[in-house]
Each structure stands twice: as C-alpha cells, then as structure tokens.
Length: 113
Image 1 (spheres, rainbow, N blue to C red):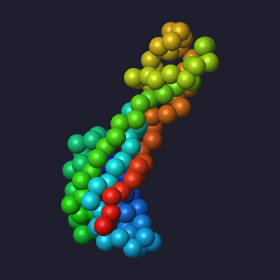
Image 2 (cartoon, rainbow, N blue to C red; image 1 turned 180 degrees about the vertical axis):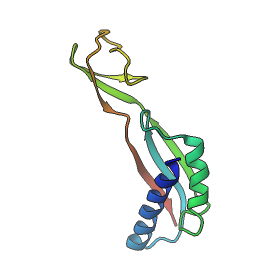
Image 3 (cartoon, helix red, strand yellow; image 1 turned 90 degrees about the vertical axis):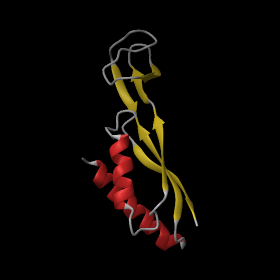
Image 4 (tube, one colour; image 1 turned 60 degrees about the vertical axis):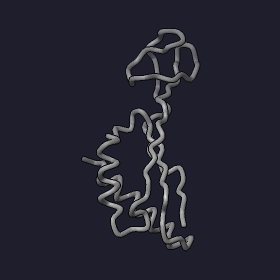
C-alpha cells in the first residue's frame, strides 16, 4: 500500500507550506492523479484521513482530480489520449506510442485558513 507513503509526502508538503505561509488549517486539498499513476483512490482517501491526524490538514476534504493518459504516436505524429498503456493509436491504429502523461500525481492546490 504505497498510498500511505504518498500521504506522508503530502503531509510533509502541507506542514512545510503551513510554516512558510503561516496558515493553521487546510479545508480542502486537491490532488491531480494521472490515469497510469497506480494510485488506489479508496486507499488514498483512507490513508489521507489517518496520516493527516495532528497536522494542519486534519479533517480536510481530499478532492481527487483524474488526469487522462496521453501518448505521442510516432506513426501519425499526433499526441493522443489513451485508455491503457499498450492501446493502439486511436487516430491511425499505429502501435508506436510513447506515453507522455498520466504517471503524475501532484497537489493542485489547497484552501487554507
């Protein structure tokens, strides 16, 4: 369950930002999660509630924003959205695709007090 370590990373960022920017509580924390990031959303939500206890984000609402998987097709030279890593190009049917997005997970923003 790597979602626990992901949440520990989020907690570290929240605590650093609280120190730097002088806020005491987070009401909403939005994270963007790529389609191929391998994050189990239910596990992330559970771990978030546990890991944030005692931090400025305790009780914060976690919003998860899905990001699509994207790849560059070297047959038609178009960047396309794909559902699975090994899908053929939806434009030309070619199979020479290089994933360019969908592995990421990042904090988009926070609503703080």
